[in-house]
Length: 397
Ligand code: GLA
Image (tube, rainbow, N blue to C red; front, side):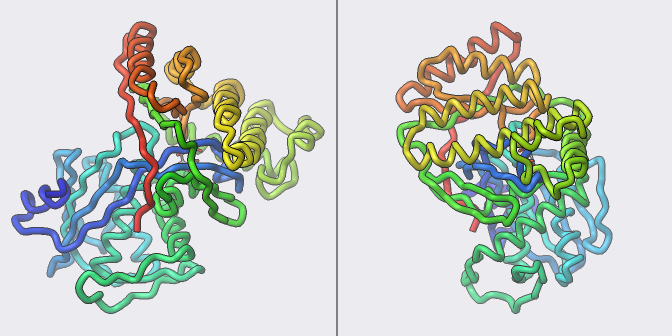
């Protein structure tokens, strides 16, 4: 049986009525570009959060997670953060948004199971937000139009569900982002929920965060994505993340543009004196990443994966030297990856300040590469490294 359904049965003593599932994502290229209206490439990967649920007659929501011992129990009328069950802040954030949009939400029971490793930069948080929103959509049907307006629907008969179209997926992604921004307190962009919703098997998702256009191009056949977890997660990640976002926005304002997306490398150099050193360094990273994503899309479409890999090394160097969102452990992982002949590119992936690296590795040498990384990492840092092979899958439906 599906783990989430088993956990539901165990905790609530009856089977769930509905299931919803959303994948994690890997940020392939385009670091901290999303909230700067920039360009980013991502993959939805075969690590999932599944939420099993059933409505209740009263106005209580009770949620359990196979990853945490303490259940969360609360009223949808009183949605507050609770430091004793911090994982429940994510579903609560979604419920708060749905309520704010006018959904008449009553109680329900839910059990969550994740195969997305926590804190490894694969965005288990966005998958949890998306899976929660989709579960609630099955229990208390609603649609969102392109402007984000929510309309409650009569209960669906049987298993019939209207499929999510692109406009509704975008509205849902925005709702999930708002949940994380406003309820959890991390000012993240749209990369994670868009990736979880718009993924396509064996395809790279190309997101233009200025007009929220989404496109796809085939992912490197002959190569495998290996995600390597440093095992390090810095305290104050949210504070560092929010600092970088605020700094990028201040840099854009100082340069007289709406967002760093509008800035070319030439303009940045010409107007460098208007920026503080920290603003300048952050802008160099973001402007450079946009440029690398543009060039990377051309290389992927041409099937030139070796040269695409070069952009990954460059992206990591830019994180390390300019955006300062790397750390010695991530730098070590990238240096070790460089030593292996089957790896054509590696970089930190996601927010940074700890977390994981993404490695593009030739098929056939994947296990050798993982062993090389694990042994090297142990001998250089004394730490154990976990890695995962990630297959590119369809997004949540
Ligand atoms: C985190 C955020 C994303 C994005 C990346 C960095 O994953 O959730 O919105 O900003 O960091 O690219």
